[in-house]
Length: 441
Image (cartoon, rainbow, N blue to C red; front, side, top):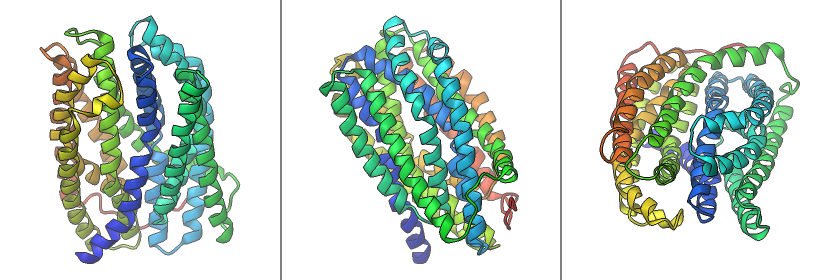
């Protein structure tokens, strides 16, 4: 077990630090924009949900690439691993270009769907129209990070994440307050930091590809194969993101307090929950890389041992995250807003979120294991089942007293609980234990 633990830690610790740094793009934005006013913070909340959904739908660029590159690495074919990764980067460029153009054109309609009122909608549109310019760099970051993780390198993404987020914070403070650009300055700062971070990662991957004589030009067959393999993960991610969108929509229907207060509180809570989710996902990143490598080399027994051990790591890290979140819940609101209503409402919401962290730790680990195994079809169906269960639960919770807290109870019990049941059941079986490597080039 000590050898397994060392292997997990070797990948998970840098991944943990990088994943904690990544959501600081929005965490720092929320802290800086929140002090402009509650409407600005609520507008950022709406824009962030939309942007996270668009980018989140493309998380397969990291997850799928990690698994496929790791499989080739396990089979001893580094050139094929890098070729697979390059195909993923080109796919990111194509999708990112389309998403940027479509997103900017659709910004008014996307924001209008939340029906939040003119003030909040205006701030949301301002932020989102600019932030969409960072879509392609963000997707390139996903793809190149996936390549490096598949190669068992989680340190380079860590360096890029830390440097990129430090730059993001500095630019946000300068542009929002120094140049008095308001919420637009926050979006501009994030886009600049994203472009520079993506450039750094591309340079690292291109250098490795040249060193091992892997092709850099776009390969139509390879790109199409990567896109085809991603369909199931897109459906899975779409279903899970739809759950988060339904939750945000349900919050706008809560009538016990002003809409701005509920949406702003929910934004801060989701930002913190996402921050912890990225942190807990560190073990899942290790699971993707190690599971893909083990199955690529044909070692089923090792895959089973890794899975059992990583589940224990998931429980442990979830408990730590839950205790930490509960401990800071009375105080953390002051970092994001001066509104006393938002601060007061945030405390019970965060306590509910804290209670769900141990389960979340296990869910993320099992998700990583099955992604690493390439079990996308099951994950897609599981995501749709979870959506079917959670959507009515969240909308019903919005009609209850203390509706925002009730929505978060539904998120913990139904959204995460259903995922935990389905993923645990799948992991106990053998159908996901498929060995070998796909051939795209």
